[in-house]
Length: 422
Image (cartoon, rainbow, N blue to C red; front, side, top):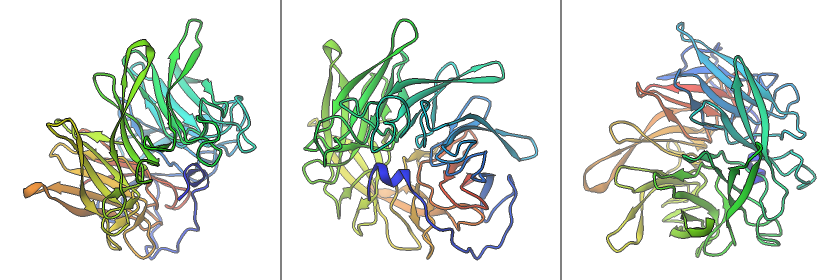
C-alpha cells in the first residue's frame, strides 16, 4: 500500500447495498449508528477523510479532500440542532493554488478557537510531482467570518513535502507535524523519507520551520505517519513511521527536546510484522500509566492488521504486545485509525476494510479482561449506502460517551459524518 499516493486517490466504485434505505441528514441508520451529515461531493465537499475536532459548544470541524467551489477540498463546520439534525458551513474552499489542495488531516483547535491543518499539495513553495508541495494553514475567527492564512509552504527539499497528517500545538503555540516525503536527499527511492517538523511564530506575524528529525529509512524508520503526533505534558512527541526500522515494518519513536533547540530521537519499537504488529498508519495514544496504544495496517497473526500496546519496563526498555489480530470477515481488517479510550477503559477504533463481503469497514471495541487479555466486539459494520464506507480515520468521544467519525466514501453521496452510541 502506497503512502501519499494512497491518500491522494483513495476511492472505489460504490457497491449496490442491500439496504435500500434513503436517509436524510440526522435520520437513524441501522443499529446504533446515526448519519449526521452526508456529503454530496459538490460545493459542500466530498471524501471527509479526517478525524473530527469539536469545540466547547459541540460544533464539529474537519476537512474534505475534494469538492468545494474549486473541487480541491474544503474546511467545514457542522452545527448540531435540538431536532437532531446537523447543518454544514464551508469555512474555506481550497483553490489548488497558493492556499493548497487536498487536505487530508482534519484540523486542530488551539486555545483561542483557531483551526490549524495541512494540505498535501498546492501552495507556492515548489513543484513536487508536477504540483505544489503542500501547506500548513490556519483559520482564525473574526466575528461571523473566518480568515484563512498559509503559515508555511513546503518546498520539496530538506523541509519535506506532502503533509497528509494533521498537526499538534504545544503550550507555547508551536506547531508540529510530519511529512511522508522529502528530507534526506535521494533517500527512499529519491523522494526522501519524510521529516518531523516544527513551526515557530516569529516577530511580524511570520512562521519559521525547523526540521526536528529527518528520517533516514534505516533503523529510525521512514514515511511520517498519517496519524497525529502525541504530545505529552513534558513536551515530548510520540509517533510512528510507516516503514523502515530493523525489520522494514515501521517504528514507534519518541522525540525529546534537548539543549540548543535540538531534539533527541529514541526508538521505542521496531515492528517485526506478522505475527507481530507491522506497518502502522494511525497515531499513538497513552493510558494513565504511560503505556502506548496503536494500530497497524498489516501484521498480526493473520496479516490483516493488529492493535498493539507498548509498555515501558523497569529496565527502561519498551516491550510490544499484540492485543488483537484482525481476522477475515465478519471481523474488520486493515486499520489505519488512531484509537480512543472511553471512561471505562475500553478501546474503540475503526478498520478501513472487512466486516462483510463488501469490505466497507467496521467500528470495533476492545474490552480488557483477566490475564492482560482483551476481547474484541464489533460495534458497527458499515454497508456503504446509507451509512458510509471506509472509515480510515479515528473516532472522537463526547462527554455522553457517543462516538463520532467519518467515512471517506458511501452514504447517499461522497462520505458521511456518523454518530455511534455504544
